[in-house]
Length: 465
Image 1 (cartoon, rainbow, N blue to C red):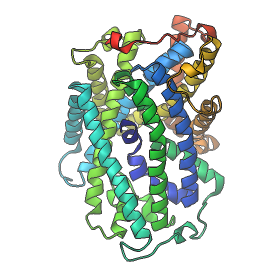
Image 2 (image 1 turned 90 degrees about the horizontal axis):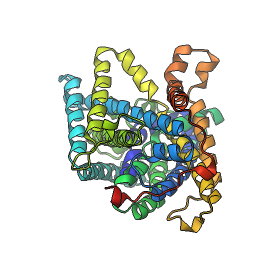
Image 3 (image 1 turned 90 degrees about the vertical axis):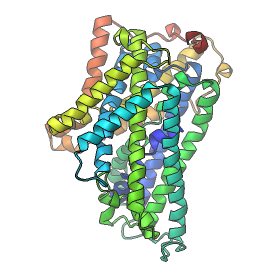
Image 4 (image 1 turned 120 degrees about the vertical axis):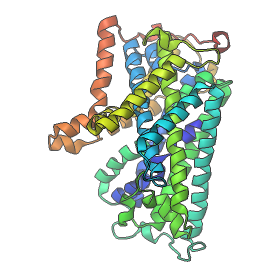
């Protein structure tokens, strides 16, 4: 549920409209299917490593063990920074959404309130976090299922009194609009929509039976997510033509133009905007809740491995890394404060965290490729693995190539115009990652670990706890 909840959010509820508008129904579906397949391979790669070595440091620990400690250091700080900034973005967005009902109350009051709520959910017990995240995810899943049922009834004229059929799939230039460049541009939107699925690797460290729960989640998550995304986008495209200006108007501040709201209204549901507003609010809070958990566990793992101050690795009697949690909350609050004091600073912070999710995916693919090769090189049998990733080495290599492709393709137009500010805003995550990598490499003189020296020793979590 955490993995499903992590990937179903504003990317589906809001951004799917602009994908259909830009690339047409066929182009949007093709982009989401392609990125969905890539995510499937990434999740099977992560699943193989997470069942073999279930740790809260997840891909940062795997990168340090299987590739190079400098790579793991950069991966860990990159991912922590991503979620610390995303936390500030989420609580800011939540305040904007509340403005739909209470436009006269200053937004910072709600931002601070939501930050405190998320902090408390994470400060109690890991069970409290898991329970909250489960119910946040349930709300999103029920919404998507209801949307699919109502959408199908609307397409066939049972609701709303108008038969749509599939005529909008061949409307004007549809199904493919703007050719290959438009589809490739949608890879970026689809990629951002699917981010959050990698949270499953971090939760493995505190899962009671990771060898059972992780493979089970990996096997079902891909089909559920793909089904939700593909069916939802197909329904939106069938009911709303890609030429509709409303598809480009959807945003967190304009819920009335969310493609979900538009479809519900076409079905005759008058209160659709208010309901969707409440659902998108829970979606944003869910992302913030997951982000706080992921960043504190990553910081805790780095503190325990010596890649962050030791104090960050300490946990209290309830197993909560309070120092890491407080530090992350403070950074999130400072980032939030920058949005009030200087919007430009805030924009740069958001830009700096923009590509970090894709960099984490690159790290997963590289770490798995090295893990499997080291595992064979050191004489282990594949049959001994509790969960085996599909189609190795094709899976991680395809995921790696597609991730790099998406990272480079973020804003190629800025290079064509040589717009330095746009280049900096889009690609800032890459020099920050490289700085961390080079700093650690020079300071500790690390090197690529030879395959026969890769540390494949498993950790007995019960002894550790």
